[in-house]
Image (cartoon, rainbow, N blue to C red; front, side):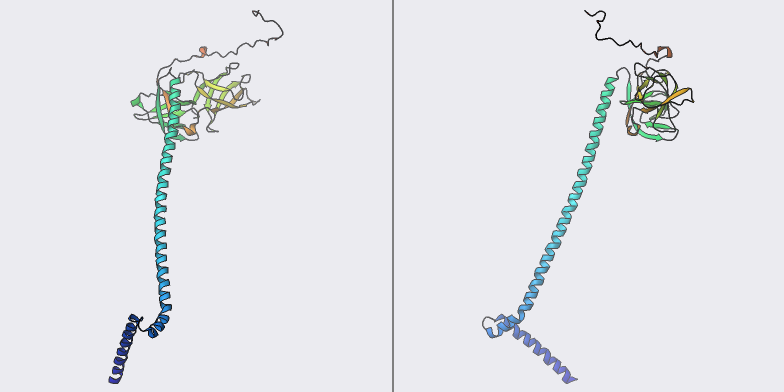
Length: 303
């Protein structure tokens, strides 16, 4: 056992001696070329491998650093793009609101005969038998029940319920709503009632028309003023179809409202008093049609 221990000690000393000798020769390789050249040749593969590993490691670190830098830059670009999109959305909304408000301002100037109160639609309730909207004006703004509500495109409805800070508007497409209407065409002037149609939401019917009534497709209907809720002359809509059932004594016409209720945002409430129209005030007689003049004959009063 002692001999084995001495041999291990001897081998350890020899290894350290050889390592020291190799180190001395490496340090003095210029003066001892017959030793340094073989050592250089033997160490060349290790030096080359170590160099390649170092270069690969440095390249890999550079690539990782570049990837992290690009990722940071991409993240910043994404945040900047999101901010620009938000700004573009806000700008588009401001532009759309500006165009809409300009249109409303121009409309208001054209209706100087009424005192109009602007209001914003804050909710809409469309059902099979109810078409209503909630506006942000109420009794604190002077609103009362049955005040007419309009937009630049035409008639919207009337105030059906009033609260302190809001009000409910019953739309003309509501099946419970009836509006006195008259055909605007001078040769017709047919008067009857327009009602909301529960079977076809969004449309109305011009009802109780006599079979001889002069009503045509694309005729324009305006309020007749009869009934006391709406002033005369407000645009209601246009006739889209005239039904003619021989089995019934009356005719009916389908009416498309002039106002687009799906895009209802701002409305005007007519808060001023206006003249009521009586049935006797409505001229329903068609003008007398004169025979066509002969262009070849001299007309009376013409020299």
